[in-house]
Amino acid sequence: MMLENIFLKILSKEIPARIAHEDNLCLAFHDINPQAPVHVLIIPRKVIRTHADITDSDKELLGHLHWVAAKLAQELQIEDGYRIVINCLEKAGQTVPHIHMHLLGGRNLAWPPG
Ligand code: AMP
Figure 1: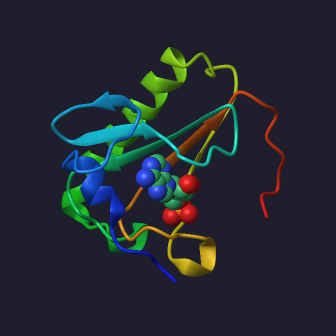
Figure 2 (figure 1 turned 45 degrees about the horizontal axis):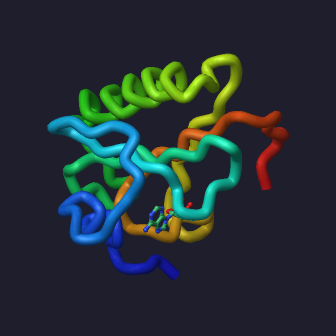
């Protein structure tokens, strides 16, 4: 079951997070339960519940999130191999109802994922 949108509280700084990047469109912070040596979440400030809800007007925003991911991969020194994951809805493991991109790296990542 999806939890409440805890990421809104991180965006408003109501609850703390270890921030890796911040700009007018998005926030990136380290995952509280990392699945790899580097595990950062990149979220838009705009509330989009899930990947299946994106619209034409979100195309530039989604491109921006990818640009931030590539920039962070360099800064966090995982540019030699990393993975970007967006879990869409409960069946795919989404637990927070605010679209988020996982940036994972710092170890060998197996394929296929579970
Ligand atoms: P997903 O399962 O794709 O919805 O991913 C949600 C992610 O949010 C999980 O990897 C959690 O560990 C992470 N998470 C939940 N609460 C927090 C928090 N307060 N700070 C940082 N990461 C969080």
